[in-house]
Figure (cartoon, rainbow, N blue to C red):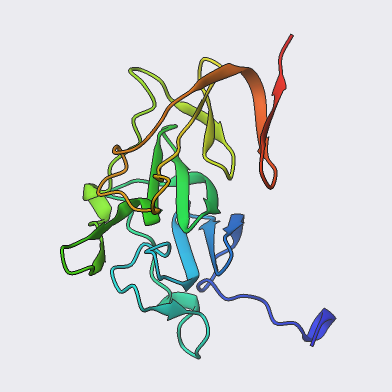
Length: 193
């Protein structure tokens, strides 16, 4: 069951993985074409698909070329991805950030959860006028182009729900940093002199 007997994960004919991110019950990969594919449980929209009952990759015929790309918008390609707290975020090739999953769930008056539209309707995260994202941690702390750090907290203390990514974000300027890392309950940065 392990070693040579452990099968490779099929993400599509001729595709290779550049980088990978995993949450508790889902994973996403940026492929060599800089597009994103996600598999696993989609109960909070973390696969970027509207069917919140969907689980992909546990049945034959769901992976490989059958596994859909995450629709980030027309011409939007990714270079870094993180996943955690039922949310996935990417840094795009033009150094901006998009997130989907729990941060894009809307609950109607009957308690029905739906994922806000993806694609061109998926907004970029506002990190400040003229700022771009250089790096990000799993905890959604960002190192910006001016070496400042902002952490975005898209969840309220009541429930991990937000009608849009802009609602409930609490940016904090922490320090000037070269890189960042998230542990279990902390964010750490390597400072420059």
